[in-house]
Length: 182
Image (cartoon, rainbow, N blue to C red; front, side, top):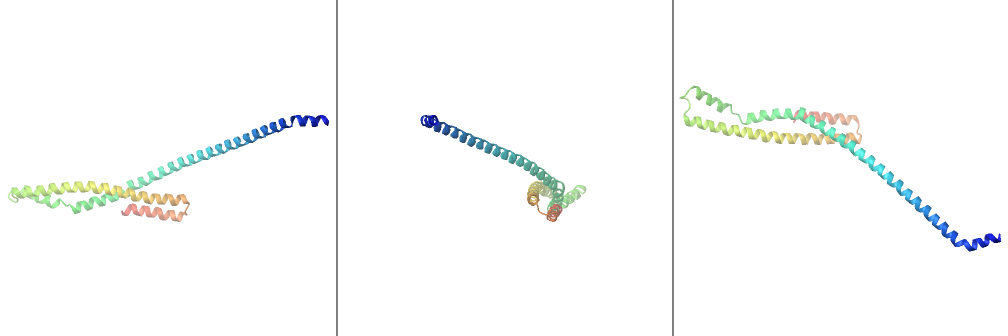
């Protein structure tokens, strides 16, 4: 026992320093391991978020393309037909054409000045009709795409939130109603 006490007295400081160094090393190893595990968990979570974002983007892109197909296939042709009828009614060229055709068949009906005046009016109305058609078609196309995309976005958000199927039926019926009556 005496030798053990002597050994302890001589090497006590060395044992404490060695135990402290080993304890500190073990503590640092555990902290480093916990940090690496936390980084791995964060990287895994980030990879899952990226994967979910990619899936969401793909789903959103498919939804957007479906909405564009609805606008192109049903809403836009109906509205364009209505627009062309309204432009044709508003800028009717038939009365000018009839007067020119009558003057062509019977040379004494219209004087040269009247023919020139009719041609000028016809030229102005034709140009106005063309410009109006292009402008109105562009604006109408943009308007319909925006409106259908807004409706489609609301439908997508409602679907993503998990609303009942009755709400989806109402939204789809409203979307199809809008596509037929715009």
